[in-house]
Image 1 (cartoon, rainbow, N blue to C red):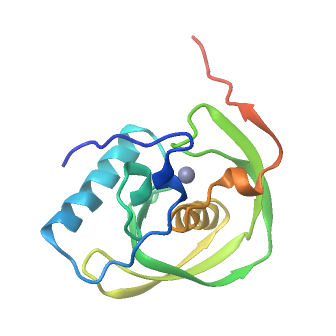
Image 2 (image 1 turned 90 degrees about the vertical axis):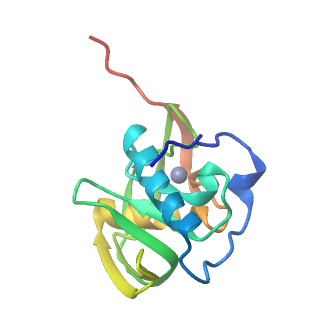
Length: 156
Ligand code: ZN
């Protein structure tokens, strides 16, 4: 378990197409653990491998209902739509309005390389779709509606 540096801004790793994961290795297990640790430390709801500079199709999500590990995820179904503010650990301190499906079904492998399907609504759908976009070099900035805003921080 270790924290990794989250890449920010226009670093090239955030704009690459990531490679499929063919098998589980000790290095990949370590990476998944590190992604979770780094996501929790940064108080995010999701983190994708390219955000720590690793161009593999792996992302983790936790919207407060426990960790979800997605390896080689594919979006197999979407429905309806939701519009709301979205942020990204690679674009710190900013947020913007993004419209995405309100429901998504994702087919992927879990950390044991077993095929699983994950259904998500609302925030979970948004988080999964946001993270899967990262694996194809896409950022929410590409689909933002309106201005990029500063996140208002609470001050005591
Ligand atoms: Zn992001």
